[in-house]
Length: 372
Ligand SMILES: Cc1cc2nc3c(=O)[nH]c(=O)nc-3n(C[C@H](O)[C@H](O)[C@H](O)COP(=O)(O)O)c2cc1C
Image (cartoon, rainbow, N blue to C red; front, side, top):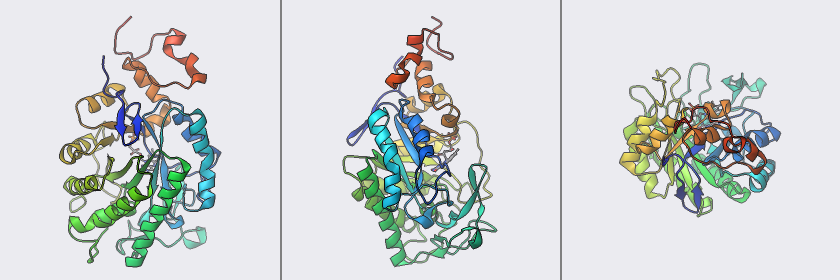
């Protein structure tokens, strides 16, 4: 059976071996923005598992853009140096390309971590810091009111993205993804709920997309020309009066004009009490619409966990790639198992080759090909 999921995909100078993407996942395991042995283990396991593309967690472009004090960053020589072992591991042992997600948390920065996830806002005496955003509107009750970014501050934030992208290129990241989803700074600009500016960056959709576009354009220029740069979006705020898929289609067209290589379609997280109809593949329809209307290479994400489900999404043209987050935490060899289930080959690290079902000679559980 020919598989769409295991068909290579070329983007600029990079050819992905398949369409499976390890989604960006905050690990909240850094100090002072520094990568450490956790990141080496966490990213390393995915880098040897035959994935189409592996993303780092949201990596802050400046210290105040970290969600929590435990976030990964890439904003100075020390944070650049700390990522080198991960890139050296990829170079020596990896069989999958590594992308970096560059982000800024804006008004959702400066929170604590509880049970491995972002928690409540930190007071100054707990190490909290002043947060920024498009408008002086807090994310929720109990969250700080951000300082609205003025013209000079916008240039500085854009420059922080540029500096991080340059560092990422120098480190050898294969792909860069600009994080404009999940209620973080660039999403805050895109959404009429968090952006109430009356200048050229607020109001109409053309104005709301302006700053994210400027950041994308600058990152694109700063990252090596033969390596892809894409954007992650929330395609809806899931509330009346919020960001809509229509807005994202307008954004997508403009991104395409600027040479965007892919769009990664998620949703939500800019409005705390939105009602989200969560279920298998619940965001795929939005990815399909963005792909159909913009022609951008599209990544679908969100409760995609079954190999046949993933195969169908790509085969039916709803998306070009699928990303998994929780499914990869549960089964870091998801791509090997999906390949086996679909009768395909994935890249095995040579050290692990003896675990391949064909070498071991055991039938593959869930193999949909035959009963042989
Ligand atoms: C532990 C964890 C950390 C996450 N951190 C990020 C992140 O850093 N950046 C991001 O864009 N999304 C982040 N997400 C969202 C995932 O990338 C993904 O979009 C979401 O979990 C839905 O996919 P899933 O159903 O396959 O988990 C995170 C999700 C999890 C479970």
